[in-house]
Length: 304
Image (cartoon, rainbow, N blue to C red):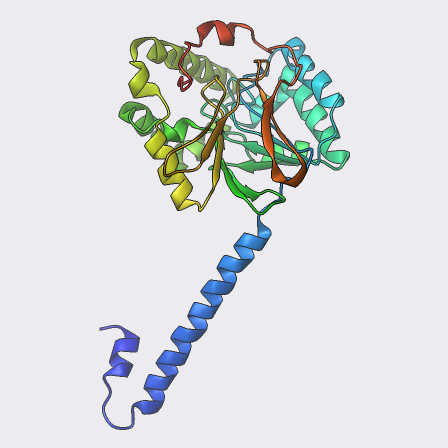
């Protein structure tokens, strides 16, 4: 029997103790309610002019590849920029920050933040080892599980990479949990550079091979998974990347579901308009890796 239960069952003279229990529970409920309210107030608001992109798949060792993105950043000045994961095609810890292309990207992002932009970078399935060192160099906020935000009209939205919605791909979800386990996350930054690079190349090859043998229905993002996530996070809108194919639809009994093209595609940008409106648009940037689009099947929910 817990402490409160023992106090409650005291005989005569226990009235004061019972009142103490009730008061303590009341205070705890008030603290919980204040905590929820604080969480709601603390949500970032994506104001008019904010931009959302994803799936750039930049090669941290290729400065030419990364310079195209850097040039695009120099032409924008949003209040917020959100990257929905897979900024890099592979990232095995802080050692990748020393690569020539990575230095180009970190410098460009740091300049954007220095100009007053709020920068949010989500973990993707290729760069989930981005961490505190990258945050310090760029000024970005890294979000391992995505994050929630509001629009100016009060709409709450959940921003995610999207691979967590591939709920029918049991093998992939198992691998995802293993790769993001505390042990591996702690080990990865300590790997020698050569070994880290070899692991990154191996993971890329394995991902590409898996795509070729899995059926579309298995590897696709699932509508029911999207509904479930929206309910858990009290979101009226779910915004994802990962699929490399744009979509914008209102799910029956569910949220509005938007997916942005891979960067360089025809609808690779979500623009926040006046009053909290959202629309898909073209960034005008050339695809960092044109081969990405050659590999993507017509399905709107391709796993990548």
